[in-house]
Image: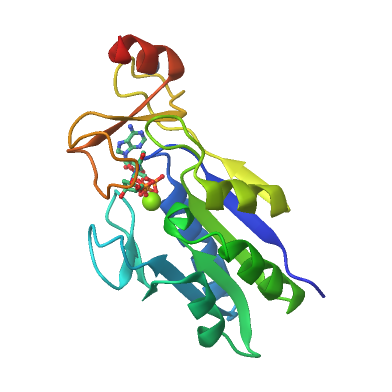
Length: 182
Ligand code: ADP
Ligand code: TMP
Ligand code: MG
Ligand code: ZN
């Protein structure tokens, strides 16, 4: 049977990584073999672990190109988990299709929008392929409501590819984004 794709998306701090890790746990509890990946560029907390903003983590393969995923899977692999998909090349779309056709379930987590509200292309492609989309919200840094759908960059320049955390980015609702942008 073909696998299913679940995409977890939303702004920073919305719990995407936490939710991805909870699916890893579900597969491990079911004694299903998993393979976990992250892009090599994301070295925020650890080079070979996926770590959430609250500090939980699992071991992951840090890879440069989407195609490398295929080297790590075998007949026994039941679930593939990929964090920070916005940083992967667009070939991830074809790699994921290949995994689904092999009967492997795929879980992807990543940002939908840059801090300038431009779509991250690889995430957009995966959203179009998803069987299930989980759209997360964060608590707005300015108004305190649980309605933040955007990420605002508060330091470090204008670049849209720029690894970082609370020193550079906050989660905000649309009203507060517009207010803070002036
Ligand atoms: P993501 O991968 O979406 O950035 P994580 O799963 O790594 O999110 O982190 C989620 C955790 O971040 C929450 O459980 C909470 O402890 C913490 N956190 C920090 N700032 C916020 C915020 N503004 N809104 C919600 N959670 C936040
Ligand atoms: P997170 O969603 O797990 O918090 O991680 C998002 C990563 O993406 C983090 O390293 C910051 C980075 N990022 C960018 O490179 N460009 C952006 O526009 C935004 C919003 C985040
Ligand atoms: Mg994350
Ligand atoms: Zn707000």
